[in-house]
Length: 180
Image (tube, rainbow, N blue to C red; front, side, top):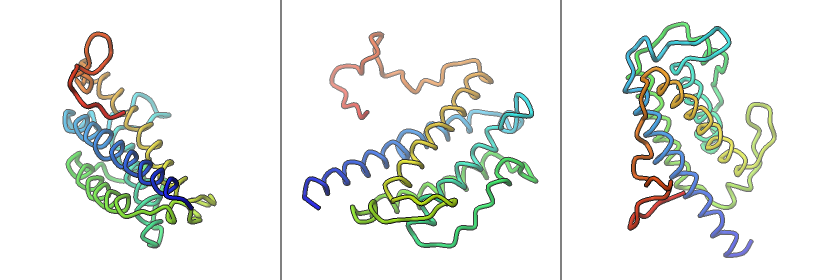
């Protein structure tokens, strides 16, 4: 392992943490907070998930793939219950639960090393490396955050304003430091 490898690991972890915790999570929270309770649990059809189910699912995924795995905790995830919640908790409870998980995930990502990224894990029956686990969580969170944003825009009939700092050319206004 070279210093360059270590630098790449640090860059990957910093980018993953920013994407997950500074972009996706706050925007997801803003979406859910903007909705009425019945909208959080609305489904367009029986084959689709509600925003509430997606938040439960993201909580289970982040907890299983990052928090439990890297902290060597027992995996207690009940994935089917995320899609068929026996009760419909209020949005504030969903966000509090996911918020606690995201804080734990932040702590995990802040302490991971190159060795952790190369370490083998078995998660959900898959044999993966730590790098795979981190990437899976960020990609998976982004996918479902996008669904939540789309449902929110559909229900609200309005732009969410997440890109209001971009000019008409689609570029950031001059003088602003933009992270990818």
